[in-house]
Every structure is written in C-alpha cells, then in structure tokens.
Length: 295
Ligand SMILES: [Zn+2]
Image (tube, rainbow, N blue to C red; front, top):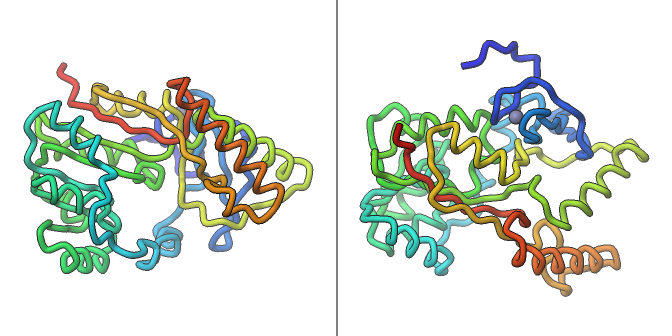
C-alpha cells in the first residue's frame, strides 16, 4: 500500500513517517528492543519496529487466550439494545473473538454468529466449546466472500500490526447497510491516570535510563481523535462514539493495594474515573458504532 521502506517508521493509522520520542520506556522482548514512537501528524503512539511473525508467535501462545466464557454476564445488554435501535440485523462476525465473551451473549440474542481467530488450534477449541456458533481462521475468512450485518471487534485494534489494512479488508465483508461495532482501550486519550503514568515513565526513562521487560502486545496507543479519523479513512461514518474510564491499569479496589504507592494510584484512578463522567473527552476505553459512508 505504501512505498515507504520497511526500516523507516510509518504511522499505523495515517502513514506519516515523521516521529518523535515518547515517555514510554523501550521494551525488551524476544532479544529485541521495541521503541514507542509518536506520529507527528496524528499523535498515535506505536511500537517500532513492528513485530515479526516469529515475535507474534511468542507473544500469543495458545494459553494467551485463557479460559472460555461459559455464560453471558449481561455486559453487552446495553450495546445490543443500541444495535436493535439501529435496524434489523441477523449475522454477526466477531473478529478476534478470543474466549467467546461476546459470542455467548450474541447467541443468546439470537444472532447467527461467526467467530474468527488467528490460531487454528484455538479455532478448533472454540468449535467444540460453542456448537451454536461457527468459527474460522482469519485466513479462511479473508479468502471467502462472506458478508455480515454486524462486524464486531473487542480489544483487537491495539494488537494489529496493520490496523488500517485489516479494517479495509473487513469492510469488504460488511453488508452495505451493516454496521461496524468496536470497543477497547484508547491508551493515549486524556485522563489523570495516564498523566500520572506518563510522569512516572518519563522519570524512569530519562532520569534512571530504565528499559521495560513487558511483552509489547499493545502495538499502538490511540486517542479519540486519531481513532475516529482512522474509522473515517476506512470508509465509516460515526453513528455512536463514547469514551469512558476504568481504573485499569491502576488498582480497582483498595484491597488489591499492597503498598502506599498502590493506594495512591488507586485514589488517582478512582478520582479520574469520577471526572470522566463529567467530560466526554476524558477516559481510557471507547465504544464505537459506524456504518458505511455513502459517497
Ligand atoms: Zn499518524
């Protein structure tokens, strides 16, 4: 799609090649150092270099998925109501369906559900765990001509090495009057927890010259603005977009705090969550519904 050489950082959302450094420490994983660069054009923070297939295999062993969801918790009740208000839809693709948290509830709502995952071993396990839905690998999905009324992605975009290209491919599988529904983190969107983390990371990176040793599974940190622009760029028109906040990655209960520092983090996060209810731009999670832009 782009003629930019592979050794020049290229923004995963807008394709711009001008970058600046960030307060996020370099992450050492699989004997490589991954930097967090910020795009000068759209402010997306992304991991560079992009992980190779070998890195990805190590990042996502089959155990990464954890246990399958056995029954619905009502987490998506409000979302399903919103979807019903938008029209009559029959078929749902859950792209990156993971342990079936959404699949279970979509089956209960009487949708015809197809789940897609990368790993063939996981797909085989999903088939036997949820006989009322069907599952396929992402390769099989993209090789097919199937179309869906709803395409759903939960906590997926931040794991994609080529988010724009993947979204464009998925658009080919959306019915003309269908909808795209996404949710997940917006990790570089304004909130007090993020400001606190950035200050801590800045001190560790530039004063103590620390590196991080986490697995860089989240390949991008977006905000509301650059994310909505991406959705627009792939041909979607926003029907609904909200940002809210959870304590993550700070503790969500005082009982989880083992030190004074953790207690302080808990109070900061709890205050930030309260503030997010007053300001629509404030938060670290998003929910988006969009339809195909008519040209
Ligand atoms: Zn950009």
